Amino acid sequence: MISVIIRTKNEAIWLERCLRAVRLQSLTIDAVILVDNDSVDGTPDIARAYDCTVLSISDREFTYGRALNYGIAHTKSEFIAILSAHCIPVNDSWLHRLWLNFQDNSISGVYGRQEPLPDSHDFDKRDLWTAFGLDRRVQQVGYFFHNANSMIRRGVWEYFRFDETLSGVEDRAWAKKVLAAGYRIVYEPTASVYHHHGIHQGRDEARAARVVKVIELLNQNQQPIGKEAQKEAR
Image 1 (cartoon, rainbow, N blue to C red):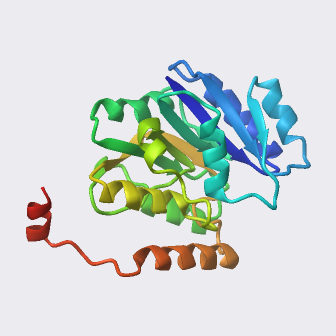
Image 2 (cartoon, rainbow, N blue to C red):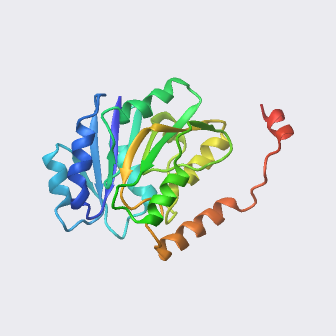
């Protein structure tokens, strides 16, 4: 029913803690698939010790979207959980809390809360606490989505795969497409993970520039939808 996809590049420091928490989940998992990008620190060996399927993608081939599509293509599960290797599920109900939202067939994807660790940088603590609050919400227009901690419906992915040309923010690009098709997205705060370096990685200026470039591309020619237009669309 559920497979877990984890993208990695030199994640040996965090991966064992991540996989230990994944294996303790209350729901049965069909497969855990690691898509590794030329790690040199023993990351694939750790994954195999936890009975993961390890796939490889080279630096030349790698984009975030391509790595996810590659991993998902190797599963047959109805639901796909996506987790960063340096994110650690807070408890054994993480997966179940994501999955519960799919009882509504209009839901295409769910993303969960991300919490800092005590030694996370203050910038990262600020960003995580600001972006991931305690109120559950259903999104019909706003396309914020985050693949560090998410789950998607495979049937939707078959029609709307992740963009393999983007240098980042493939999650928001995907969310924008599925929302435009009439699906909805849920933010589920009870499906929480610890994320040490946060969504912006402190003051990583190169990362920020990459994210801004893609978001500007997504926002091109985007017109706000007023209440009357929304009524007509329904």
